[in-house]
Amino acid sequence: MSEVGIDRVYLALGATDLRRSIDGLAVLVKEGFELDPFSQCLFVFCNRKRDKLKILQWDHNGFWLYYRRLEKGKFQWPQKSVQKVTAISRRQLRWLLDGLPLNLRQAHPEVRARVVL
Image 1: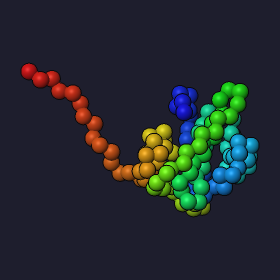
Image 2 (image 1 turned 90 degrees about the vertical axis):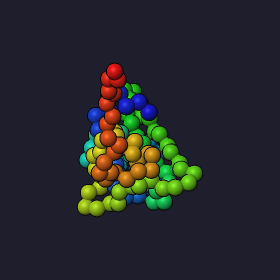
Image 3 (image 1 turned 90 degrees about the horizontal axis):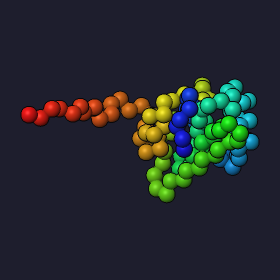
Image 4 (image 1 turned 60 degrees about the vertical axis):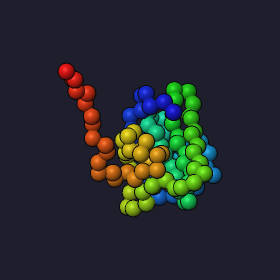
């Protein structure tokens, strides 16, 4: 998945029926979330068991549909609230894909190289 040119990452909160294909997910983005599926964004969906993801991405002349299935474990997926969708950073998406929660308060501190004399 290329992150070049990605403006935003949107998560569909709660569970999504992943039997939907590209067209069904694009309609959900347009009508359910009132967002443009043809924008330079990633739209991420998770199933009820939280062990499968689909990511919809428009790329100049067609859609990409990425699919991920975990053999063990679950994604730390946020539950649906009043909102149907939320924007997250690309870093937070990597956290989710690695099995970490979105609300990490602190990552490893940055280490800067020191000059050794």
